[in-house]
Figure 1 (cartoon, protein in one colour):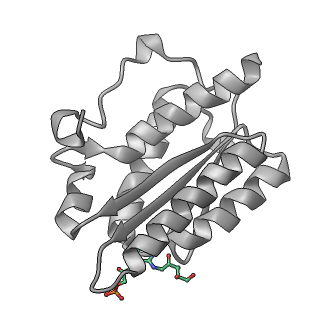
Figure 2 (cartoon, helix red, strand yellow):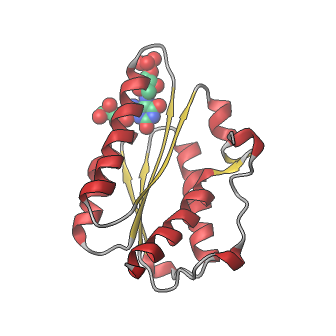
Length: 162
Ligand SMILES: Nc1c(NC[C@H](O)[C@H](O)[C@H](O)CO)[nH]c(=O)[nH]c1=O
Ligand SMILES: CC(=O)[C@@H](O)COP(=O)(O)O
């Protein structure tokens, strides 16, 4: 199902675990920060709505999406978090750089989910234009940050049950 047929902000709280026992780290890219801060708000609001304690949500910023890999890896290694959310917004420009950044970040975050013991939730928009990003960070299609917050709670709970 494409995002256009789904509201990213909709979830059924009654079917989700309580987040009260879990600690969350959020790494946010400063590129396109009007979008990434909207995604960040969506994630934080979802975590709090699912019972996370404000003091258990830690926020960190990095210059661009490519640096999300390093930031998330450091949070994973710290042992201080039960789930990490990386937030970025990559928008296609004139060159192939878009493809390399998107592939690099995707592979890097995938690798962390294999190599580290902490779930790293991929909240990186890879859009053709700014409007697509705005539509997915609190606009027409909801907020992918909300989806990421919910996913972080589910995966922290998954890890705790193993
Ligand atoms: N063009 C975008 C970038 N580019 C910067 C890279 O992410 C990285 O910071 C740089 O290559 C230095 O390592 N980053 C985004 O997050 N979004 C973009 O649209
Ligand atoms: C994803 C990018 O790095 C891209 O937005 C940079 O733009 P350009 O390809 O025009 O240099």
